[in-house]
Amino acid sequence: MDFIRKKICLSVFLFFHVWFSTALNVSTIPFSDGFSHLFGEGNILHATDDKSLQLHLNQRTGSGFKSSDLYNHGFFSAKIKLPSDYTAGIVVAFYTTNGDLFTQTHDELDFEFLGNIRGKAWRFQTNMYGNGSTSRGREERYYLWFDPSKEFHRYSILWTNKNIIFYIDDVPIREIVRNDAMGGDYPSKPMGLYATIWDASDWATSGGKYKTNYKYAPFIAEFTDLVLNGCAMDPLEQVVNNPSCDEKDDELQKADVSRITPRQRMAMKRFRSKYMYYSYCYDSLRYSVPPPECEIDPIEQQHFKETGRLKFNKHHHRHPKRTKSQVLDARNYGNQDEE
Image (cartoon, rainbow, N blue to C red):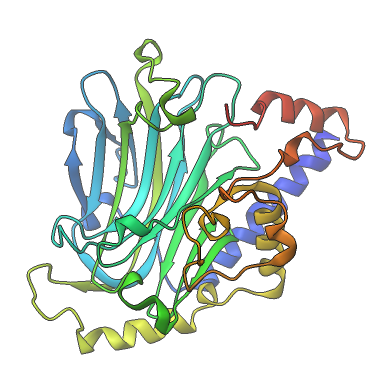
């Protein structure tokens, strides 16, 4: 049984490697070729090959890095392995933003991984802000189908003039299609890529119920195989709509990674049905009228409360008969419930 499982895992790895290599004509880059430290320099450890690094969080400080350039659209990606054991109160973020340049009208796209107490699974959320629309957050929250602290997985953000796609490995987990009604809420100004680890004890785990416990420090997030593919912009340039970026935009929009295949769309639907536990689109208390990019699925909507949260925990449903190894894997990763 273990041999069969290993063969399946290898097949999935090989498929993803081929898909990623052909979906977009990109290659990974050394850290020094495209990035610089953001904060906590003493808590950033680099591999000798300059292709991997660790971000540490201890009682003194967290840490982070950012791209050296801003990009007018692009494909941004990294393989990430999250801290293990007790991680309550911790946030590891992988995101694009221009908040340093446009303090009142910033754009942002993010993965935020939310730590948990021992025995409980990591959770994460994605979000989008455009033109400083922080009062109109568009977050979704999910569980993962694997333990992100055991091995590296690739997390990617595609941002074009027409759509935004969040990927985990080759699975698209969320797509935002631009429409005219969104107006300035769709990110439109150049953004840089950022990665950070920090203490968010006031909200990250069960609304702040569980705090970061530095008895388990240092907390280490590992990054490797970094990808920056977009039209680099001068952050001081006043004209953000640079005609020279049109060619790069066309390349991005024609790439396979910009188009979700039928197989991938089915995988996305399965992921969202099984692992998404909050969606702003179904939060009628927050938005009496769903934001214009929301595509309401009447069947899916029945599973959510007016708060946007699930009416029940799908992970408590009766499961079909599973093998002993599957049961052990599920137990080892912990109960998916949010406290």
